[in-house]
Image (cartoon, rainbow, N blue to C red; front, top):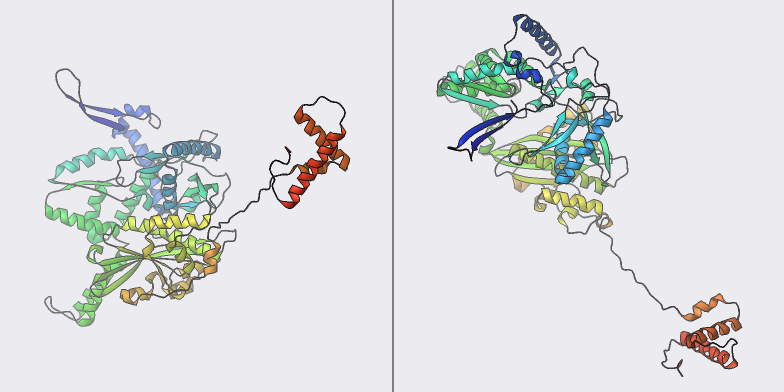
Length: 607
C-alpha cells in the first residue's frame, strides 16, 4: 500500500481538514498494478486457471523439499524459475557497501550496525562463507534507522533486486508463489464477522526458517570483520535463514506455516483449520463470538504452533495419567508418593519463569586450539532446582599464536557478549547473573585497575561495560562446563558427559558453590601491564674547541681564531699582526683550561 501520511491539516479556510496521502515507491512497483484487476484478486477465468496451475506446481515442489534439519528447524529450497540464474555482482555490492559505510560514518552508527551482524553470527542467522572468492551472487544492504522503535532502532535491509552484469537479479529468478494480497479482503471480512477481534503474530518469523546450504551462495553479502589486533578486513557472509526482502520469502513463510498446520494432530485440527484461514504472512487476524471461545483458541493455538516441539515434554504427564489409570485410582484419591514426586519434578521444568527464583550462570574457558562460552539458566521453585542450557559458542583460536591468558580473556569477552544476548532475549525480572572463569590472570585483569597493554585494556574495557566486576567468580578447571567445548570431544564422549545438563554443583545451594582462593600468576599479569619508563637526557653545551677538530694543525687553529676576532672587531687590515696571533693563543688556552677544569670565570675574555 506504500507509505501513508495522515492527520489534521491546519490553515484550510473554513475548517480543519483530515487528509490521508499514500505514497508509492516506484523502485519495485509494477505500474500496471495500479490498474490491474489481478492485483485485487479479480482475474479472467482462463488466466486464473493458468496461474493456479503454476502455483500448485510451486507448492508441490516446496512440499517435496521441505524438511526438518539437525537444528530442529524447517529447512527449504529457493523456488527457482526456469531461467538463467544470477552471476556474481561483487563489484556492485562493494560499491554499495562503501556508500552505506559513508552514511553510517556520518551518522555515527557503524558500531551499532556491526553489532547487529555480530549478534546474527552468534545466533547462526548468518555464517562466514566457506569460499571467500568473489563468486556467488551478492545482495547489497543499507541501514534503516527508526529511533521510535522500542526494539530494533537500526536494522540492515537487503536488496535482492540488485542485478549482475547481465541485468539479472535474484528476485527475477525466483517464484513469488501465491498472491497474498488476495487474502486481505477475506481476512478483513472474517475479522468483522464476530464479536471479539483477535490479532497476533509470530516473533521473528522469517528467521525461524532455514535455507538449504546449496542455495546460500545466492544470499551472500559483504561486511567487515575486525581481528584481535584491531585490523579490519572485508569478509563475505551468507544468510542461513529466509531473508526479508527476497521475493519468495513471504511464500516460504506461508507455505511453511500451512505445512505445519496440515500436519497437526487430530485433536487440534479444528483450531489448525481456523489458524490456516487467519494467517496473512506472519500475522493472525480473526474473530470469535465469546470469551470462552477466545480462551480455547488462545490455548490451542499455542499448542498447535508448538506441537512437535513440545511433545517430549507433554508426554510426561500423559504417562503419569496412564499409570494412575492402570492403578484404577479415583479422581479424588491421593496419588502414590512415587507418582506425586514424578509429577512435581515435571511441573518444575514447565513452571512459569516468573514463579521461580532464577539466575544466569555464564562460563568461559580457552585452550590452545579453541575458546568457548556457555550459559545456563538456574531456576528454583521451593526445594527443586532445574538447570537449562541457554546459549553456547565455541570458536577455534586464530592462526597467529596467542598466549593462553590472552585466549582466556577473549573467551571472557565472548561470554560477556553472549550474556547480553541471553539477558535481552529472556527478559527475566530480578534475575541474578554470575560470570565464571578458571583463569586467575583474567580475573585479576578484570577486577584490577591496570594500566594494561592495548590488547588487554580494550577487552577489559568492553567486559566492564557489559558486566559488573563483582559478578565475576573463580571456578576450578575441572568444575568448569566451558572446558569441554574449548577442548572438543567426540560424539560418544559428548553424550556420556551430559554436558547440556550443566554442572551438578549448581543444583546445590549457593553456600556450596566453588569459593576457592586462587593463586595469581604474577608474571603473566605483569607481562600485560602497560610499560612506562623514564628517559634521562644529558645535554652538554657544545664547546668551540669541538669545532676546531676540523683543522689538522695548531697554527691553522690559531689563525682561524684571529680571523674570527677580527671579524668581531670589523677590522679592515689585511695581514694578521703578532699581537693578534698572541691574543688568539691566549683565547685558545683559556677555552682549553675552562673545559678541563670546569671552572667558569667571568671577565677573562674582556681583560
